[in-house]
Image (cartoon, rainbow, N blue to C red):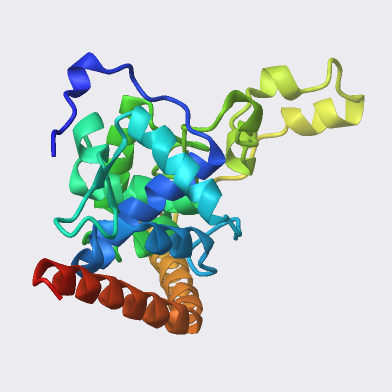
Length: 275
């Protein structure tokens, strides 16, 4: 198998919805079920159409997926592997060769390709299925690297609560700009948002000295930060529990696919032994 030289290839900045799903599946399964990777065509189809950890849920046909795999192969994003028996072709991705991702960044991008826009807590919980991401700080650091590379974007400062992130591989017609958050709106200059003239009563009230601010013991800011961190972690834990529930419901499908893969491997081995 010849690996592509990314320096001689055009950059990849856009992918169709089907291309994103197939690439996401190949990357996810390489992380989570390496014993069955590279994947057969049937396994790729099952991964694309599974109901857990996917948004939106789709129903791609064999022809759909085979065509997309060929498109990705022509872009040097996937390759096909032919076992010695020549019976069952298998597919693997080349994301590590086409991009300079760290392993956490690849896991993060994989989740974004599979589900699209999501909160930091949700993203950390889901990406940690593939690569350990020990803290929100680490997640923010890896995300910042993806943003600087131009492969991810956020709805605001990553340090703020309620921030959502997404990948940037959408086609132009699919792009949906992030709506301004309430915190961002609150940062608008009063000079730009104030009316041209205030009523006299309002002006008189404004002339009165403002009451002194209550500062307490000076630990309010630290307490608020700790509370926000705990709340973000709780949101991530809730997302993790929901995800586990969805995955449990898909265990039967996964088990059936595993049996199919084992049958294919057994048949390959039998043919290699001259059976």
